[in-house]
Image 1 (cartoon, rainbow, N blue to C red):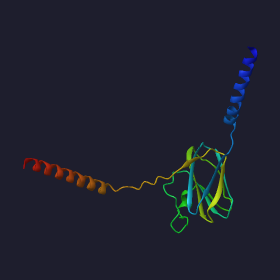
Image 2: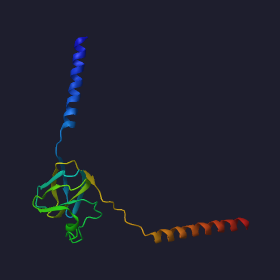
Image 3: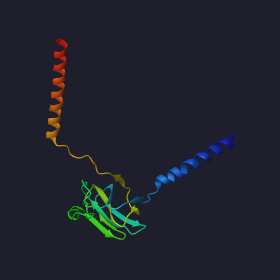
Image 4: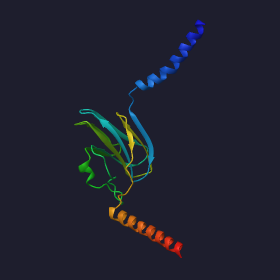
Length: 176
């Protein structure tokens, strides 16, 4: 009976040890993916005041990458149709780097959510590896275009008019 308890305790420890070891590790974040030209990838993370974020990007082929860090949520990619970066992105980004293997090392001035953008301008498709000392979450720009309120109101009135017209026509046909 004693042997069964010892064996059961040993099995429980063997199961719990890898789980506890995995949760205790503070490994850096790695993201690997294949991207094509003018592809933008977005990530987000939260930083406390005076906390440091270190980002480094490596790739396998001849891709030309740009790496940006924002302290406000980006609403567009800032990459135009001609595969060029719009100049205003450099005013909006709190840190950026380009080149063969771009890196960013930034210390947060206040507690905020920070957004990271990776852009492959040319030389793709390429395989990239993004490494960060913080856990990152993928972020996707919403692709829902704004809908003009005037068109919505006109279409609702038009639909309502058709419903009323059909309803009156059915009532007239029922009396004849």
